[in-house]
Amino acid sequence: MTPPPPPAPARHGHRRRRRPGGHHIGAYGLLVLTALLYLVFSLALPDTFPTLATVDSILSNQSIPAVLALAATVPIVTGAFDLSIGYGLGLAHVMVLQLVVNEGWPWPLACLTVIAGGLVVGVLNGVIVEFGRIDSFIATLGTGSMMYAVTGWVTDGGRIVPGPQGLPPAFTDLYDSSFLGLPVPAFYVLALAGVLWLVLERLPIGRYLYVVGSNPRAADLVGIPTRTYTVYAFAASGLIVGFAGVLLAAQQQIGNPSVGLDYLLPAFVGALLGSTAIKPGRPNALGTVVAVAVLAVGLTGIAQLGAEFWTVPLFNGGTLLIAVGLAGYAARRRLRGGAARDAPAAPPPPPSSPAPGDGTAGTSP
Image (tube, rainbow, N blue to C red; front, side, top):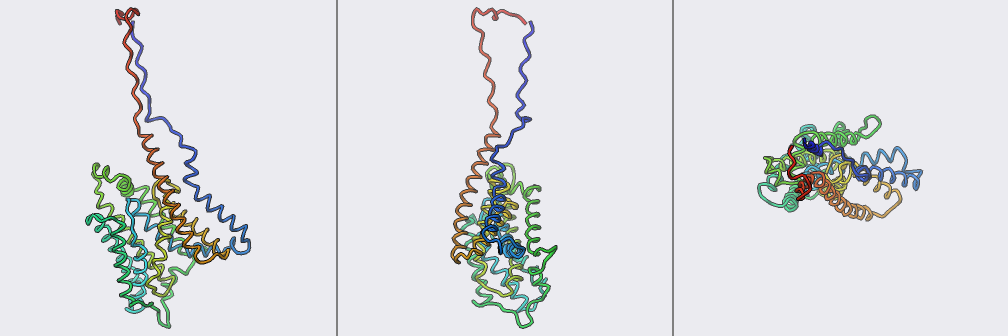
């Protein structure tokens, strides 16, 4: 008598798993919130809020916070924080105006020099954090304070004001011009977000950065040089901060040594809140742009309602606390989901031995 064939093994690798229903809510909830806020403020302020002038103002005024938030996002991918970005922004925009106004440099050369300087500063931050073994909070706070000192030294505590002839129109057009009826800075944000999305989501370097941020020990075990990729992240952040400084100089047209600090908190609010959108549980460029859009619509609506000046830091601080809490929850939920998916299937129980006298002990195949 031939025994029955063994049961086919379960094909766990080919089973299609349905995502939980809350995935889309978590991924696109901020987009829905942006639309709801716009609708609420449009109903409350029908004469001023739902206008093209308001849209232009949002796209233009929030471009620099969006660029700086994208700069903060890259180190967060690796589990580090760059608190020097606000100080770096102030130094970069002051240096552009110092070179153009006081040193007589051509504005393209001054802009390229400042952007390259931002790259160098980012590399130095990464080296101090990784090879100096200093916590990123402390290290970048220290380097940021030093950059603030350099800013004060360059400006001698005052402002850099162009002469009667003003700045070159081609330079100010970097911020003031429009394209396809929309402010040009909005296209800078979209282009930068697209580049970061491509690098982080589609290229090997992006996957390495995420591995370094999620599990540095595992990255070391598989041969990923964690220190090198963390330095890469800080370098990218410094490069973007240098570019943001150029835009700020074209917008302000006056060198103010303390203006960069006003952008630090909104940048981190956007970066941390962005990690709860599009790709919940992980920092991502598109989520950061969506988070900045939520903040921009909210702040613009609050301002048009005639709120007091102190509501802006109150809004930013409260949103930062909410963003940190939501980002932590999304990360824990993502880790739990990954652990459940990666858990091996339980092996089948061993076959029971035949009971004595059941007639099977002496059966031959």
